[in-house]
Length: 343
Image (cartoon, rainbow, N blue to C red):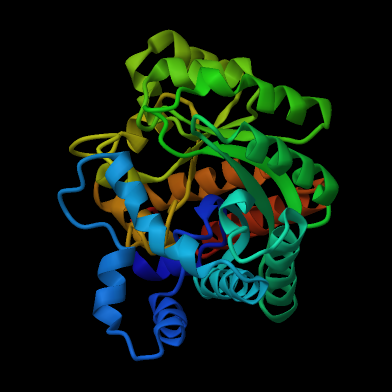
């Protein structure tokens, strides 16, 4: 099973840059900052969520250190490059990596410099490894950040099609309701910028409904749609993809017990699988797949179908989409030709 998972060509739609830094790199940066060697295990404790995490708000505390060390163009470029390198080793063929430019201005960078640094890291990785991808820029939930969110949409417009493919809304969903951010997505719609919205993770079905009303083409997480049968039907009828992140959902208490990804998929919802935050959640896409196969009674063939769902709903170009679908179909045909069953 593990070999099948590793060899499977993968597509990731939901992955945060600042939540996926290599602990070794963060240790190097912190040691330079402090002028003395820092213990790697201490760094890991600061970056990774512990068992018994109460909720999403506590989970988000693990982003404090990553934000502090991602305040230079060099660090942002390197972090992006290293993440795509790590993904390529997991046979990820395409990944949309997201981050909030407004979080990386404390070192004097402009919005454009922050985004260009990440694009430079992405382009370097694409040249060296068998991987493709784009960046999603996150607006942030909060009381006093409308100006930052407006600038995030503006910078997304400037880089759209040149490394940036969409915008998002992230942060403390239950504290700062989705309904309060309509203006941001009106702007994005006017600029023809695609967008996904974190919804139905820490907050309930109404958050997802608002995201759909705003015109979100995808939903980040969305697992709490199961609390509303009419919403489930709407997601199915409108073929809205859910960017499901099983291990993260369990850690933030968005779900309890066995993750309902099997139920979501069997109902006919367009399910995709992503790891959310490789480092904060101490996971990766291979571990996510292993969890799925060990728990919700799904098969390798189901995972291939979820990857195809993801490929069909990337915010990239039609060419990127067609190439990914072809790669996944070829892998599926090869398995069939070899007579490999679903075990």
